[in-house]
Length: 142
DNA sequence: GCCAACGTTGGC
DNA sequence: GCCAACGTTGGC
Image 1 (cartoon, rainbow, N blue to C red):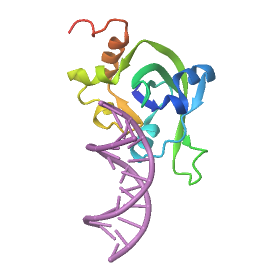
Image 2 (cartoon, rainbow, N blue to C red):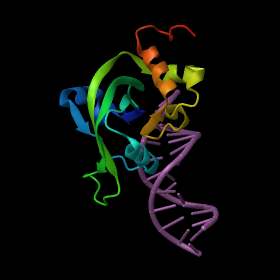
Image 3 (tube, helix red, strand yellow):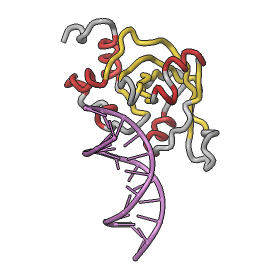
Image 4 (cartoon, rainbow, N blue to C red):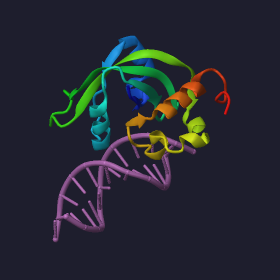
């Protein structure tokens, strides 16, 4: 299974909203690279849910429940969307500042391409961030 | 097909 | 609110 990070401005669609809705269609992605990432998503893939602009932190974990299909909100029919559901909130928010402060996450898509709204997350990155989100201030161990 | 102009996103 | 980065558009 693959891992991803999906971004949303809380004012547009916050994590709390997804929790309330249980699941949602991740529509409105127009960026070409982001679309490619969406198409690569498979059912069961996990996604970090990141709040951009406000908060700038990873707040929860979502799961892909429906693979890419044409985005109904795109009149041109070029864009795709996936359905995701809320899995669980993270124990502790992981902020962008912390991610930037972690040398191992220097190559993280969120940092490297800050404008991309759907970015891939490697296994190692996923594990590390999971660790960072688990209560302690710093990742346990080395 | 290239490149400049413009628009949008997102961090600070 | 400002500015930098980057994607997209349109003229040539």
